[in-house]
Amino acid sequence: MGESLPGEILIVGGGTAGWMAAAALARTLNRQARITLIESGSIGTVGVGEATIPAIRHFNRLLGFNEGDFLAFTQGTYKLGIEFRNWRREGHSYFHPFGVYGSSLDASYTHQYWLRLRQLGEGGELADYSLCSVMAALGRYTAPASANSQRDRDILPSIGSAYHFDAALYAQYLRLYAERLGVVRLDRNIVDVVLRGEDGFIEAVVAEGGERLKADFFIDCTGFAGLLIEKALKAGYEEWTHWLPCDRAWAVPSASDGRIVPYTRSTARDAGWQWRIPLRHRVGNGYVFSSNHLGEEAACQTLLSSLDSAALAEPKLLRFTTGRRRQAWVKNCVSLGLSSGFLEPLESTSIHLIQTGITRLLDLFPGKRIEPAEVAEYNALTQAEYEAVRDFLILHYHVTERTGSPLWNDCRTMAIPDSLRQRIDLFRQRGRVSTRGRALFSDTSWLSVLLGQGIMPETYDPLVDVHALDAIRERMGTMRRRIRQAAEAMPTHEAYLAGARAA
Ligand SMILES: Cc1cc2nc3c(=O)[nH]c(=O)nc-3n(C[C@H](O)[C@H](O)[C@H](O)COP(=O)(O)OP(=O)(O)OC[C@H]3O[C@@H](n4cnc5c(N)ncnc54)[C@H](O)[C@@H]3O)c2cc1C
Image (tube, rainbow, N blue to C red; front, side, top):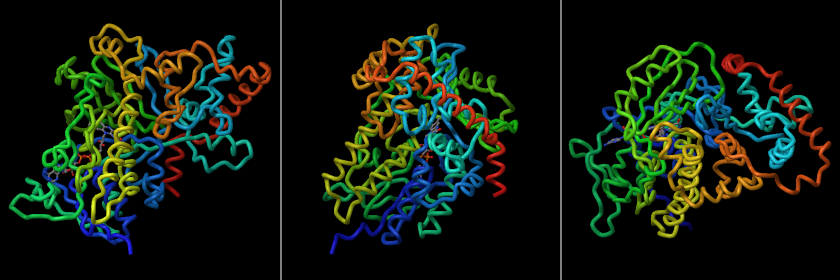
């Protein structure tokens, strides 16, 4: 007979993190533990977090969501990657696509063949070999599974896509799901946390009015407040503001003009960058900036004056400190979402970090007893993941030709983590992409940002010369043509969404 599960699990917080955790735990624990979620209607949620990366598909699959139903409910759209405008320098733009360069069969070598051709002034742009980049440029979308010819069957699997959705509707969708599986929701304002005298574990949280809510295991999803993990358990916070200096964001929705591009846009500005996330019913916009380099009012004006269409609400200001909780799991409490740290939204990684936190928790799920070795393993894996995301984000800020504004001058000249320095050096020589931390960001991601920000390798992998130059030319020329033809044969993103809705 194995050890029994914690009988009572209390999730405090009902934002994206709280409801993702509730849904996944309810599905996995199969009513073998009581799950309660507390949220506060008066405090509300952070209300942003609308762009994702492709791994979210695994989460949706775990829960058994129907994609059409999910996207219709959340006003969702497809995301094939991110367009980075002005990041390398004013007027320059590049695309960070999902999926792979080349087809799934020869993905790891495509950029090396391209580097070979480029030395001869041939081969066009690397983006020409990415189906997602070409689809995004043409505004097209189709599902990888829709391949019905042999030609499509080896090209279409190279599509990688994620979603944009309305964060509030996503939380509602998850809530409906979790409540159907028995999760109990309470609207309470938590004002205190009671620790057990003997071991400092959390015994209960206390709601306004004095009601005590006890549990065996707690999940802190209280957002930036970190009510359990920090205020009660003092887990500590490691700040990364010296590498990721943006600490404010204004967010505002604007009207949709009916054209829904299948990608996020990120535009660098003097004191930060601006996002544009197209949903079906509106466009999400925001200006992420460093308050050391620009005042809040001026940042708000910059955002409002650069919208493509009319603002639909008052802009909302968010304040944050980039970094990570030193211990994401302490005693009988795991933190998920903003309570466990926040890097910044540049590569849409927060929802993903919630997802991997939940997966890790399920991999190391406690019994009635908490095992310190499992807690240590959870914390070490979480730290490694946060550091991998951190390095990828720093790359965007540090490798740039932007001059003329203090923020970019600071970022361009700052000392960077050794782990990132090694990656850059490795790439600069022969275009090799380090496979460390590959699980989160693929070679495609690193490649597109390393090249896009302006690092051109000195030469290519010597193994490329095993192949005759004409054979490389032929292979790459065919690849470009087939990718172009496949993308041109697809419906527009808007037509695809309308078709999915009708179905
Ligand atoms: C500017 C910005 C842009 C972002 N963009 C993206 C993006 O594009 N993609 C992405 O993946 N992520 C993004 N994120 C991160 C994303 O918003 C969060 O990871 C996600 O929304 C999860 O938030 P949360 O659930 O941790 O916190 P919240 O949404 O803040 O939820 C906290 C919950 O705790 C409850 N609560 C708090 N205090 C108490 C209390 N005392 N008593 C009871 N309940 C309480 C609140 O009521 C709420 O229900 C962005 C974040 C910011 C700041």
